[in-house]
Image (cartoon, rainbow, N blue to C red; front, side):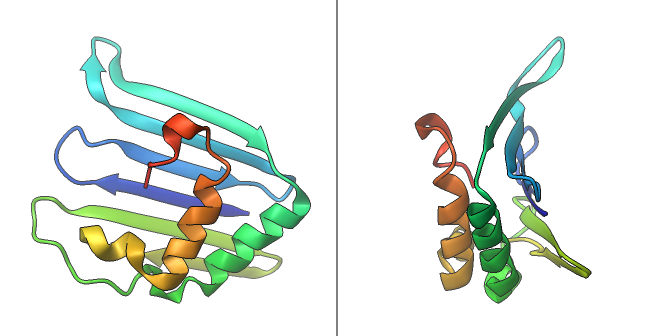
Length: 128
């Protein structure tokens, strides 16, 4: 299983949650602007991926050691990213702290994000 969250930043910034289950369910949920009477705007997307694709995402996540190695962006724009991987008995959690725009360009993190975005519909592919 793999989860990846991206959030923070300026008030009202969009919060993203990606999940890939062991049985191949790939889900994305977002919450952010505009804020209506019902609260923040929410979007959800779900699709199925193969067992091989689940294993590839989990392997990329395990190898993304640079996920947390990034310079700190100045407050108040403290965007952050967090991921959790459960691979058998192994559980890995990584949290970035405040990140800057170059965070997603780190080699292993970039490979992971590209694999995740490859499963998104075109209108969602530029999400973090």
